Image (cartoon, rainbow, N blue to C red; front, side):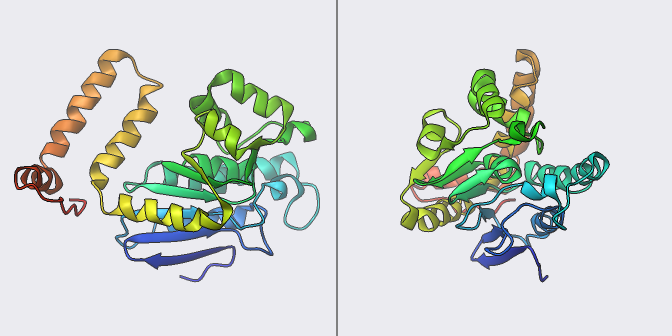
Length: 258
């Protein structure tokens, strides 16, 4: 399928999605429709690598609009429900791992999209920002949940109320992202990670993602019951049998996601 606002290509078991293009780096409703479509049609891929344009990406158009005019409150609300929330929900419910690679600026919605990946790798010149407060507005795209889970209420409060940049180094120190690498090594490092995950136990990865998210909303008994249910279900899979055989035979397992 041809896309206008994103680039999609496959390399082995990894689908790469470039979020935005150099001439269209702002996050738009149309872009998020295409992201949702691409994530929903992965053709049997076993991992996703999401990358922003090297110039960085923001959500300026959510406030200003693609026509250059100020968006109305009704228009913004409708776009949030129709496009952004759908794309984020598709991402959250994927059964395969996702790696994001952040160049330069990750603001607003691209910030949240990148941070909702299983692993976020950033270049050493990258920064993260939630600057809606400077427009007398509040963040969207699940920013409150995402940032509060990753860095805690106090740091999330600081990011959203001060609207200042958080460098990649500071984001790493805060536990917000997985790794910081040199700009010239970013794509290679991020792709290598995605390829390694694609060869791994993707069923287990999906269960771990679900459990981590649910743990913030569950009590001890519910968490342990869910863990037991997931482990029982996974032990019935072909991949679990392959993992056990590989351990007995002292060889590397060959996982297939079934």
